[in-house]
Length: 168
Length: 168
DNA sequence: TTAAACTTTCAATAAATTTTGAAAGTTTAA
DNA sequence: TTAAACTTTCAAAATTTATTGAAAGTTTAA
Image (cartoon, rainbow over all chains, first blue to last red):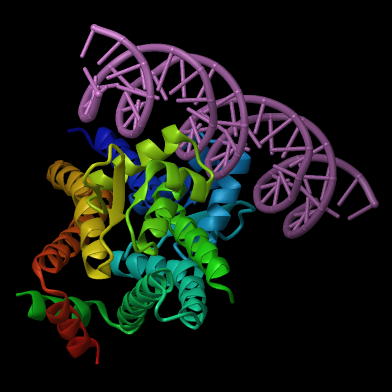
């Protein structure tokens, strides 16, 4: 396979994976492009490489910066802004985990905490089933939350070392 | 909060969470409804409870069965099909992990394996960066894959016991 | 100041995804 | 068989989500 073809496939695959996991396809593709490009790129170059509009490129880059996956860079004597991605996969994984935890897991846990407090007739199967399911899911969510928190604080080598120790 | 209101909120939240993670909102809502309902429901009852069409209910239930989250049940002397959800959260988590691994992670690892094999000029920064990123992501994906595999085989108590041991 | 170079915004448009509902298909009991 | 009870299908419609591009905004250098 040619490098050019391989790059294309990587960008497509990353975009597809993103969209399957609730991340805008274009955003994932821009991220993929920056991941495999050694030097920072301008908005113009990104528009060109992915055939997207200026508005789209601009908003997507803003989002990626918001996710902590991409940073701006200025070159001395130039007006243009350059963008580059952190290429450390551990940082990427942590950053994504951190953002999604904050945006999605935290609010759900907050609601589940409330829902477990709902009172009802313990003899009523409808109440019992509701309460049981909500309580169980709440426990699972909190376990996930704790695991993520540890992961966010951890060093990569320590984290995988520990995982491997358990999982043989 | 009233039980009825709490049920509604749970169904909404589960639907939102699903859509944020690439799972059809209605599918997540039907699943939520079945999770908090003690007895199996008919298509008719699900249509009614969630205000969705017959076609939608039918397809969604088929999908949920395909995901291994819902099962059909027949009642003696009745023509209608009844549906119910496995209410064990550990089973749910495992089932979702299993399906998404098969549908999404496996194909990505397969492609990454190919992309790491692409040859190029080791002096070329474009090649070096591409190769490095792809190799790193491949390693991460394989670690995730291994961890999921262990999780799929594991018993719930053993799994969380081990996780907690590591993460204090 | 001015004007060129560049970035951001957002209403309109396009694309993708989801839902509907009526028709076709299937199963069962008599 | 038949017909009622029930399930499935799928083209069209509705909804949601993403993208465009031109206009407005900002920054910089002279």
